[in-house]
Length: 199
Image (cartoon, rainbow, N blue to C red; front, side, top):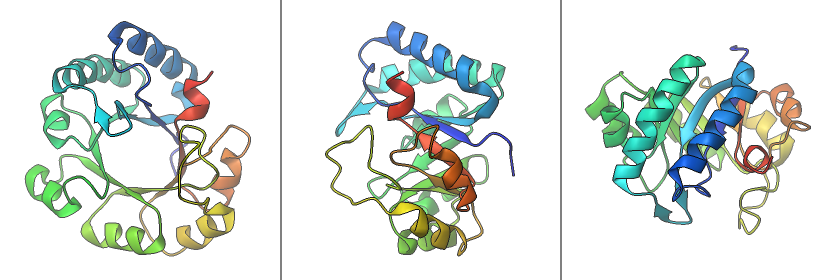
């Protein structure tokens, strides 16, 4: 298991201010680089993503920073931009291209992740060829306080992690205090949005 277990997810709050976004990313990566495996570029507020031009520009600049700190850059949903900026991976969900479609287009050149909320979704993602899955919400979400899905809890994380061979990344309400509980429960790593961006 990699010693780097943290997946940083951008939260969209600074999508319209490129300078502040870059400054915040530099701050977070500089502080968290020793335990960060990847940064997931997910710049959208609600269902409103940042413009293609902004995502491309930010991606290129963040790529250099990630390379410098030995952190993988993963593009949220946008395979086209992931390929254009030479990102390390693309992260999918139920509303994006399927894992099979991405594999057909990108072959094995990219890490492919998938957001799941149940054992059924995870098993399907594993069968379809995902490299890893985000399982959420483990705890009550810090970045989405109005989230409608009930927390799965540590017991569910333990059960699910023991049933599949690809890495399970815990997401939802993860803090420095409960992150180790997720690792002890069998998670390969943990992802954070709210706790990092609020600091």
